[in-house]
Length: 257
Ligand code: GLP
Image 1 (cartoon, protein in one colour):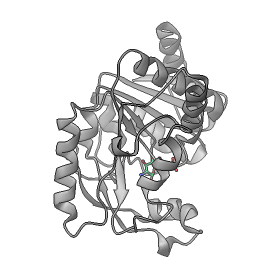
Image 2: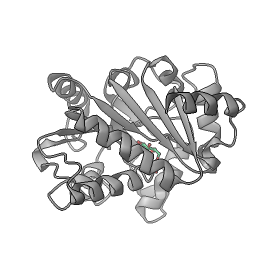
Image 3: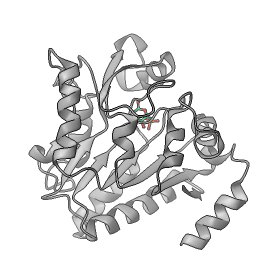
């Protein structure tokens, strides 16, 4: 893992945008996109680059990590709608609606939808660059603790912590947050050729420490990334606060720049 520590989320997101733009200039086709607040500034930077003509997702494909089960297609917080607002159209990043792929959360058979989604990623040739955030409980995508570390796209239940954390998107009401989701599995995520994980804020500090320095364990699902050979982690100071080997991470980061 390459660990970059920045003063602010804004600086870390500018670096993230630089890395994404370089990958697409070098021929990347399939973009794995995360939701949540963390990638907001990255997407803002990508929209700006699109306006300036230095970046486009036109003719590329984007695959979401996850979707809530049972959320209405019109709900503004369905991940499809969140990603549509962030990325789709000429006034955003040039991504075409038909090229935005999200798991089907409203179908009668979500297990089949999960299998279909996994196959659609493979059929497209796999993810070139996957953006990840991290949950305070160490989840990536919506792979909550103590699941299968090799899982494919599947149904999961959300922890109380995740429901509480995500209530801010649902008028502050935990009861309004869907309780289940379809998520790319840890095995699916691990097949991405390159992974860029962003984490900001003190409430991510424990999960970040476990992911970077802890033993690999299903208790902290993001630790599976220790076994991937091309992961870049971009942190702000608050999210990096619990790292014990900070100096070593920084020396390695400087060597790689
Ligand atoms: C969400 C998403 C994840 C995201 C994480 C952190 O619930 N399913 O993809 O990375 O939890 O969210 P945030 O960036 O809002 O802190």
